[in-house]
Length: 327
Image (cartoon, rainbow, N blue to C red; front, side):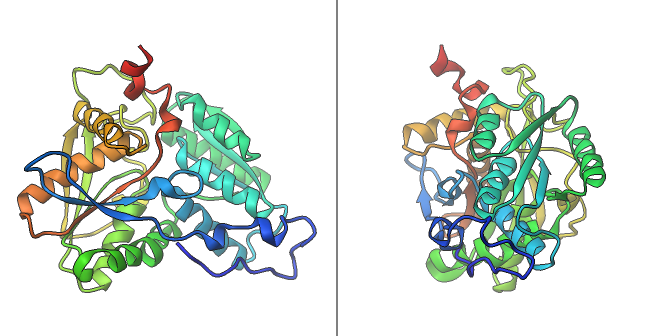
């Protein structure tokens, strides 16, 4: 994840930003890629530990890249205002990045988002606006406010800088870490679609004969509605995986793309199993691993199947995944 130091411009008020010794984002090192085997006889899956990024999720990559690109295009300057519509992790990442870059930040989140997420955003100095309705309605509300106020809008679901962050940085990291330097299959849930598409593009550019697999959580009768993402079709029990609003995913024409359906009960079960193995992850990691295990079983033991563990557990303490422990 290493980048060049964030460039200053003539428009910057350098006295208003954090001292150079406090700005660390350009020094963040790559996250580990490790082989995970959940039980004897289970396939091996290569997992990128993205929960080890500064704010605790892979969204640090896109928040920083989107803001840096906007700064270089002179769409932002020190003291400027940034906003994003997000069910949680992206807003947390933007809040942290803005605190490092001398920018103000406002998060537009669904009413149903966990309180832990709001507290984390506010802890980094961000403001939170909860919006009633689906994630699509949250997105539209944020767009209107940004236009009226003249704020920079991150547009994570449509911004190709999202995909580019993973194509330029996450993907090459994986290729430098995995034995043989090649990936046979990449698996990820679809929030914005940027992770799956960006990784796939990076692996194709490296001449890997790679296939892409979208992990899709489906509602189980074991769980009632607990709409974390206000999802319309995907299970609401797996936060961060949202159906139907990602332009990055819906506009993607890829003949090696397939969807792997996983019951949300299996997602949460595997998440708890990962905790027992010492991985402090959220439910989307259970989803990704479950789908990756299916793909790995189909491709055989010699295949390099890669997925990501997107975020950390603490933003889900009030979510259903912790229900048994709370009881």
